[in-house]
Image 1: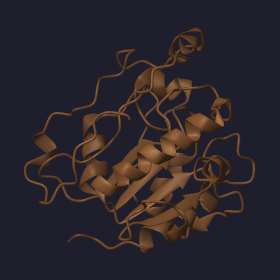
Image 2: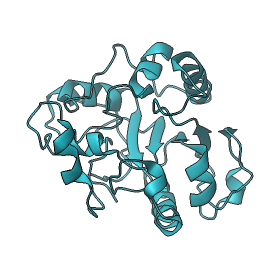
Image 3: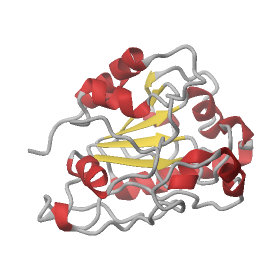
Length: 230
């Protein structure tokens, strides 16, 4: 759905830091969007933001992080979880998944992209269309996106996949009673046996039930369920 989408790589990194990114630059050229910029990104484009995924020669995915869909700020700078106030990057840093606090508010730096990939972390979405809020997505959009995601998981084969948002997960995967945490993948048609599936809370500042510490604890649990390729 969201480009780039390479096949699962088999070899360890080699001169990875010097590789150019396959991702498009920020549409705003490195500046933060203004309020009047955002409406231009509320379109039907199914590829409003590029994925962060390994390419040939990169380490296999240890963790694939899956958002519900891009927000308008995220689409405006072509960077995941980019809106200031989102607790995603602070919570990842708090638990040590990144060695520094990534600021994606103007776009994702090549060095930060490489840091994620070399750590075995990828990022994608269930639906690629950008909206102001995830609840603007239809049930059909979510379910179509979920079916596409399962096919991509079959190709990428991460050790674990973590979807950030329980309400959308329940709709997308037809699991109305699902709770946060590790999921029973036998309930999802086509899900590969070698990939764990977790659901973690939505990290948006609109989610008043969570803070950076509670989100970090969820990420720690997911990360510790996987193993380093070293």
